[in-house]
Length: 263
Image (tube, rainbow, N blue to C red; front, side, top):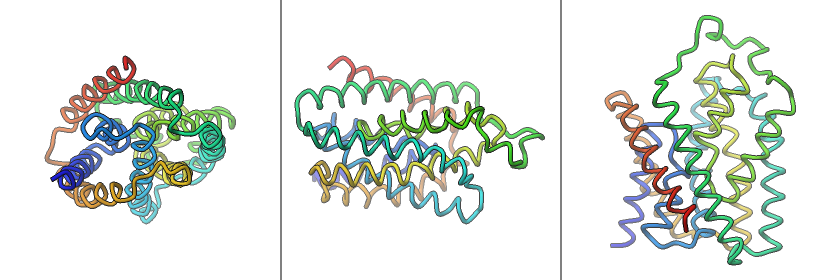
C-alpha cells in the first residue's frame, strides 16, 4: 500500500510539472518529509536525482527544437556546478545526518519554498508573458547578461540552494533568468532553466548518493509514477486554467515553506 502511495505521489507531481513546468523539487521534497516521514537529507538527495531524470527528457525535447540558449546555460553552470561541489564537500565533512545540518536544510528548504511561492504567485498575477516584436527572434545580444558575472553569481547561489534543498532551479531560476536576460523570449528562458538544471541536479544528486543520502528503491517508485504523470500533464496543459493551478500551487508551497521555517 505504501509503495502505491509513492507511485501516486510521483504521478501527482509529474502531472503538476507537465501542467505548469515547475513543482518538481518544490512539491516532492515537502511531500516526502510531511506525508511519508522521510528524513530531510534523504528526501533532498532522492529528489535531486528524481529531478535530473525528469528534466533530462525536457532538455532533449527543447534541444530537438533548437531553442536552448547554450551560452546562457554555460554561464549559469559555471557558477552553479562549482558551488554545488563546494556545498557537497562541506556536507561530506560535517555529515548530512548531523542535527545542525538537518536544521539548516529544513530552514533553507522553507525559505526556498517561500521564494518559489512568491515567484509563482507573481507570474500568476502577470499571466503569460509573450515575446514582443523586438524579442521574437534571438539576436546575439539577447543572450548577453547585463554583466558577465551576474549569471555566474546567481548560478552559484542557486547551486548552493539546490544542493541543500533540491529547490530553486524551477520558478526561482525562471525569475532570475527573466531579470538577467530581458530580451530573451520566454520559451528560450524556460528551455535554459530546464537545461542548466540537469547537470546541476545530476552532480548534486550523485554527490548526495556518495553520502548515502539517496533511497534508490524510493526513487524508482517515484519515477514509475512521474513519467506517465508528466506525459498526462503535458496533454492536459491546454485544457486546464494554468493561472488557477499556479495560484493553488503557490498557496500550497507557501504553507509548506512556513511550516518548515517554524520547525
